[in-house]
Image (cartoon, rainbow, N blue to C red; front, side):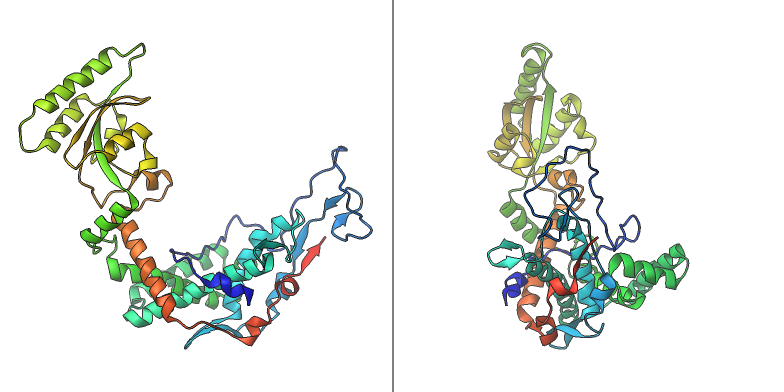
Length: 394
């Protein structure tokens, strides 16, 4: 089956994202562009192509009867099996629901379930494959819980229950919340929603037990190997900003600072550099990054990165010229427990140690995945996306 090409899982922390507010209706309808009298007609024949509005030559808005789609199988029909672990239709449907909803807008542009995206995989194959991949990851979380003996604590269960109670309060009662979950998340029931968030939370618990709350249990040696492999560096610098005209005072000041550094004969160059930096550097980032900059090559301007890469820890550079001004750079030991510049720029506030632990967890999860024997039931093999999620051209 072509779908099985898609089950080689790229294991990162896949979270179940349920948008309970600010979502579009599950019976999604894309806005039809207004006719401004200048629409360019296609050469499609409206008499033979039912997907075309014969007045304007435009694709009609598309919707799907999601209730009919869900009714294709009984909720507890087993679709995927790995030993005693299973994925039933109600669970698989949640992932399909989200994948299909994300695609609906593309159908208004003329896409079709039979469109070939890559090799011999159609849009339908990729959609089903994506849903199965996410469902299998939940099996891996469960399997990991079994082999490690790690389970949700009473405190974990209480916290998750409180979150559901808060949602009930937000929407008024359980019946209303159930309707919202069904319409915007594809959940058959509140109980299914609770079950799936418990499985998802297992990943957090597994990471906490293996590596600590902030990955503090992950060893320095392993973090060092990760940092070297990924090309992380850490440095401080003394920056004198460029003069408005020419290379006058700023360059001279940098040369004088460099002379002081070269004349230093003590045994703690990092502390001495740090003292000079706080007196002379005009880099405003010193307040946000008092420990220095942790970065990869592309995160900084090229001359800065090149100079840093050429230094040993405890070694400082000559004057490095960039568009910002004149830098004297000191390579310092990496602090594993601060956030790299690149991650911060992406809004992902994970320390280097957490990133290293996360990569290690991916390897652990992949190992568990390799131990599982995944089987697809005849009911799963009978899934035909184009029939279950039939496009309705309004």
